[in-house]
Length: 167
Image 1 (cartoon, rainbow, N blue to C red):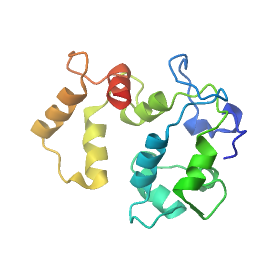
Image 2: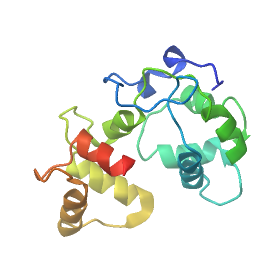
Image 3: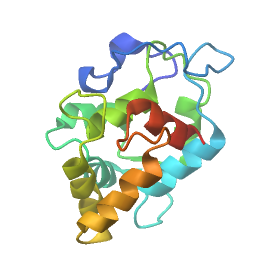
Image 4: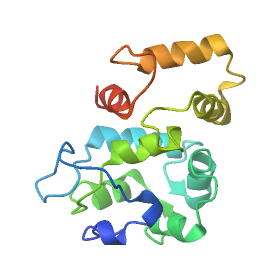
């Protein structure tokens, strides 16, 4: 992904179809991505703490969320490189010009595959199990929902998810 890539260059699966007026922008007019967010993302994908992320690392982590993502999209995310360092990721993302994309709304789609506006609790269970948290009991699932339910309506909406992610 080059710094100059726009929404039209983003794979369809990763493009956002929701209003993006609440998405903070960087000085170049693209989606704001902080150094802290890049570090957290890099650490999530660098599962073996080797200082670089490979396509295999991406597949291992993203496969939990995107079951049928084509190799073409993984190559795109890897900027057609075999490995990315944290510095590579910062160079790609800090001064990007990506517009019309809401990363929080896009991430929420994983938890709301039917487009109801609320996280599907069975998807939550599956994601946490796939990430290595073991079997998730109904009580554990209730605690997850209660923790994420910012507005107290008993469900996790996209706005609850946004408030949780953005702190």
